[in-house]
Amino acid sequence: MHVKAVTNALPWVAILYVIFRLISSFITTRRNAAKARDLGCEEPPVEKNRWPFGIDSVRRALAADRAQQFPADVLQRFQELGTYTYRYNILGSKNLRTADPKNIQAILATQFNDFDLGPTRRGNFLPMLGDGIFTSDGVYWKHSRAIMRPQFTRDQVSDLDLEETHVQNMMRALEPSTTADGWIEKVDLLPYFFRLTLDSATQFLFGESVNSQLQSAAKSQGNDKSEESREAKFAQAFDTAQMALATRARFMDQYWLYDSWEFRQACGVVHEFVDHFVRLALSKDLRARQQPSPNEPYVFLEALAAETQDPLELRYQLLNLLLAGRDTTASHLGWVFYELSRDPERYKKLRDYILADFGPYDAPHEIIFARLKDCKYLRYVNDEALRLHPVMPFNARYTNKDTTLPCGGGKDGKAPVFVPKGSTCDYGVYVMHRRQDLLFGGKFNGGPRICIGQQFALTEASYVTVRLLQRFDRVEISDAHEVLRHNLTLTNCIANGDKVRMHAA
Image (cartoon, rainbow, N blue to C red):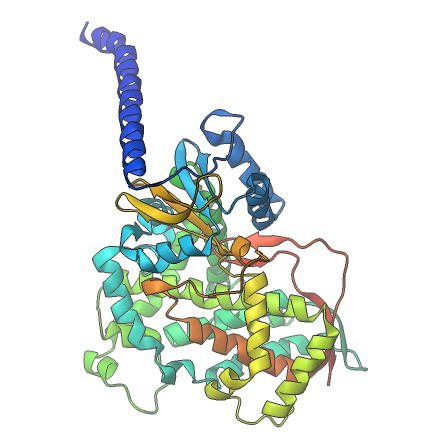
């Protein structure tokens, strides 16, 4: 009898809940409209949907993702609306998207305290990245940044001996493809870049490289018949988990709709790999961590373990940095050589500057941090690649209070826009960098969250570029007619790969 009564009551409970939500939404909308008027705000354009809850918008985003044209699709959405700020609906969650530099400056810097990364990003990334510098807000984020920042001193960034080891491993991996006349007829450079940055990042962070470049070369030459190594399994799991996180992100607040056993298993493999090094670092005497021998190579994990001995915090901070240290630099190198391979005149011009400043490949001189920064044409190449192909083309923040953005409202787009607490604000530097009415601006976000590893990333990318241009006097595109595609996971890399032919000097 009791069960029957409960069963009969359920439809009424559901109806009452829907009525409550409708009334609550109506009251909130009226309150927000009144507050917006008081603040002199006007509404921006709204992306129209054919289906309820913006389901068609989600389908369009996922289709663009499958076609590897997501950045182009977002750019097209802005063009269809004829604006640089608009509201849109994803599965019932109302969001704001902007490519206006004034709004982006407000989000990142001048109104920084009004915005967090928010619960959506944290919830999405949590299974893989846990609580780290790229998933946290408030006090914990400040704590994370405080213990991370000292590890990126100029001394650590400018130590390029480690980088040369991994560059040489890459060169050795490329050698078997070289013909008698010095040509490598067709090679995809992108996997070499990803292996190089993974190897250098793991050595810098853990004190031990996964040596993926050497393992891959041995496999491809048939010299390694062994089972897949722990390091290779880690690299594969790292990629699998990232792809899942990127797909989950397309669902915004409903990221939890996409989950799988494969994703969770990949996270477990990644965690176990990092935990091995954490255990080794924590087993080392505390005094040795705080005062390492002058002759010992710098190991990020050991320096961090002198600040905190929490194994989970160490795991997640390392994973946050590994993601940034590997993917951003490798993706950027891919775009640099994508552009240079299509422009032989500028390739030669950059190579001439490099040879004048740093000498030939077999007798290089002073390829050091300060001189890499002073090589202006190399800096211009990096800047232009980052303008055209930012490694973080889209990002988002979450409002922790009612706030406003400086522009985007009204018919002319010049009125401020009211943004209620709990809104997601996407910003697209990929779109902003393509505005012909603007000069190119920042490359690594801005404000208090500006990338602490930017010098590390640019130094590594510049060093690898210098060594490759010293070694090869020509790099030519192998397929000029292939349509450009984007592999947009947590960073933006070229999905086509860097398929080129190269001639050794």
